[in-house]
Length: 205
Ligand code: GRF
Image (tube, rainbow, N blue to C red):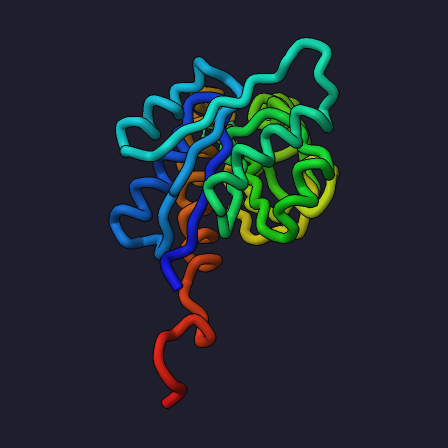
């Protein structure tokens, strides 16, 4: 049995993809990123994948294409890499069961907020605004499974609190959040991909 195979879905910068690729190369994650799939041809993460020698696929939505039809094409592209884990890292489309039913129990999402808080987009900016209003003093990041079409609300695999320092800037808070994302993502994937006793080669001792 080879090392676990991770396929990463991206829509933009790919800083989380880079963190995972670097951690696999350094041996911090006992797995390999075998494919990167994006919905956006401008995603810089595709450049990062190319630089790392990782195969990429581009799946761009067609005009008037249903979400289910798109997700079926997307699932076909992801399945072509034979993944053990499917990581949504800076992926900006909600996935339907047309995709999720193809990868039961192995789709993992990263979200820059704590479990149960600030689902959806712009959660960093919303946490900042709430802190300025005195409604919170911290936010955080989480990694969770994606069993269904719920938005950022699947079973939590890990989370980290990130303080909001309103004496600083939104840019610094966003940097703190992204740093926490990179660290948490590596930590969770290292755990998910760690060899289990049933994976060990050879007879039981
Ligand atoms: C991250 O905060 C991610 O959680 C969100 O998009 C941001 C950029 O991610 N979905 P990346 O740099 O593209 O990995």
